[in-house]
Length: 163
Image (tube, rainbow, N blue to C red; front, top):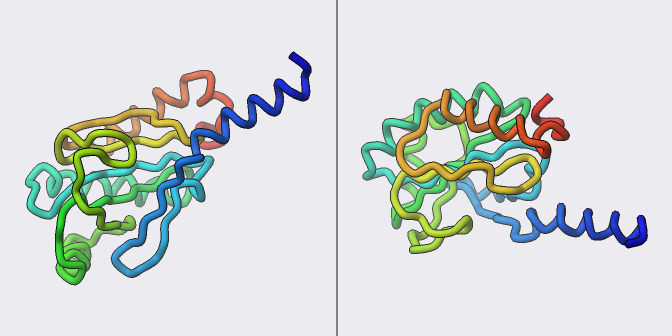
């Protein structure tokens, strides 16, 4: 294969991870695009206001987001339920959630594949690939470990977010 053709193929494959961009609006109407976060980890947390393990992990997600948001990672909360927008906005305020929360109608299949239970957390790596999917409650320390594990891979060693 010619060097130029190889480079084009490499760029096409790398870009493909972000091709299915996820774009959602938060409770304030602000649009959030997964592709705009390229180069950072995005922790996408599917949860519901009625789910006790989801509520237990909110302080952990806030801590993680507040620790990383200005550097290498952000948290997105996806309210995966049918809920009144005003009620959801009030809940977010009551819980003092610092990361964006976007409502999404529940479905058997989410944007990253089947959602088999709540909470489900998908860690999107800086290159747009899914680094990890975690079903059940998650902690700040577990998210830190998932980032370190991805950063130890060949792709991770090349990523700015891992430096």
